[in-house]
Image (tube, each protein chain N blue to C red):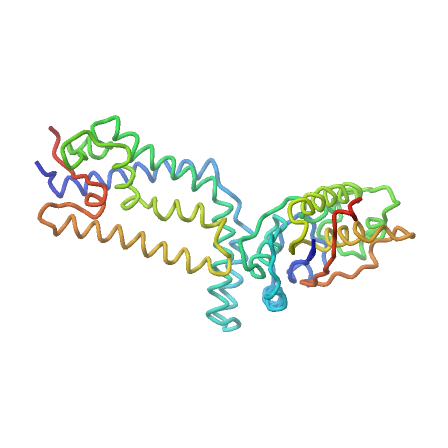
Length: 194
Length: 179
């Protein structure tokens, strides 16, 4: 039986809160020093809003600084990816497709055919709804994208990631089968506990 | 190998005429404009590699100039000025600090600076023997590279070379020249 919408939303919120707490702790213990870069960012913003630099120059300089910040954040980004994968992919794989949020709400992720969910399906699902597309692309992109076009790179990525999340949300809300984009691509559905 | 050695753009401490070694100090607007001007000048040069000091002023300069991703190399970090950090050149024995024959009283020894330059240049010559390479660094390291490649002057005084912000020098190197 399909999981009730309300339970899906509540379990998603519980999982996001748990993850934010975990990632918050990581940030407390490992916090790269971006003070100089942030100060440089303040300076270029002030110059732009004072009318001393053009929009194009501002955007390019912003991208250059974001690029350096993302490079500094490589370890924290990798840790974030690892924890998202552990929480949303590995943990449910060994727990009947249930995260903590889903367990509390007695719902689970299943493969289309009702077979046991695979790691790949869980990974693909979470690429879309839990920011993994953005995080993975930024982690690699910070080192392979030309700094002067970096702003456009992360903007495009952000739009894609948010677009995927919103598309999935609306599909879950309005489709008859309650399948989001992440369910359709990964071949999964969310059911009430057996 | 054609080696381009570029100093970062103007910083806040440059305006105040303070020594800034391994500490962070930010680029001014003029410093960023200088970097954009260098980008224009070097736009036709096909760099095989662009390496920058890990300090923000050099990283930002390199990123503005670069037409490809930059690499960070710790060997390009500014010389450690020790107790002279954030002091005016006139307040300290600056000439003594940059005299190759004198014993260092503070900061990084010139010979240690030359050793890291030696290791970097040899590695670059091995990796990019026939290519253009851009190094974005600081006045101290640019000075070190210059005298490493052209030889220490007879009076051992390394302060005579002026290295304005965002100025660059080009050196032609081949493996045969290796020390």
